[in-house]
Length: 302
Image (cartoon, rainbow, N blue to C red; front, side, top):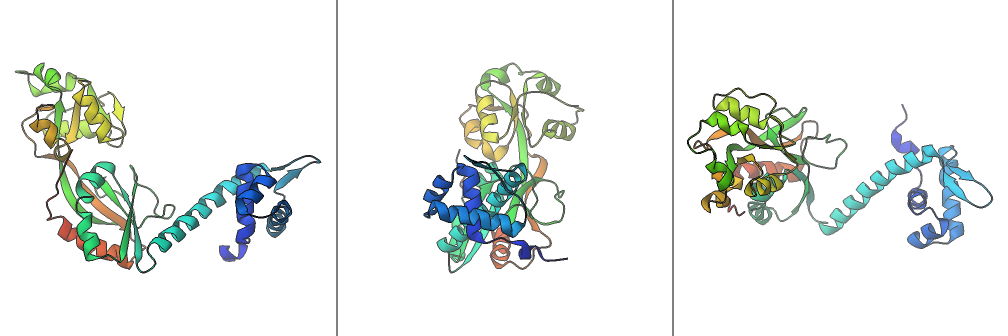
């Protein structure tokens, strides 16, 4: 089978096509690329001839892309963006390696970020780039060398390095918590329950851990802990939250635990990376450092 690289069109022609699809104008494409209209027209003809496929619908007054060409442009735009990002990162750190990490917002900000200066001090040759991803993804499709994962060892085809076990506790505003005074724990489940959409079964897991059978609780859905905590602060319901995220709110009595036991865990945080992609030095250094980071105390601020 021929190698895909044999079908790569000239880069100049690809840039012209992508720009034309985005601007819809040969003139604007020329301005963007710093070339004449005739040069743009030549590049559009070059790529059409190179691919041996009709890309344009032409009439006397206009030129537009075929549906297949529009789909092709969407794919090459993503590839060109990746090339541009890779080039920018290389320029920013020409002497060392890049380490692109997908992080969960809460763990990344509260656990990883306070410790990262130590890694940077130990390995100044490595540039760490952090981006947010809320769910597992395909490492073959995203330009990441590793990711922070919560839950169990259920991400396929990756290696796992455990970071920490997470403990959760249900909390509510003082006014809502007061309605629970003297009532059994089962009454907590009658409150409006706030949910994180990446952990749809969190309340059920916690209920089983404390000896209750809870099935399919409904309630408001949030995409991040920060917004869910704010909702709990404003009395909108009970939130099941990692203890390390609400230390200050609990200390200041702005949130009240609805259950005295705070050492109940429904999962752990892991650093994961693709099994098939071994021997990348910046990541190897980072994984080794994580063993040290696990013992470091974070200055968690809310």
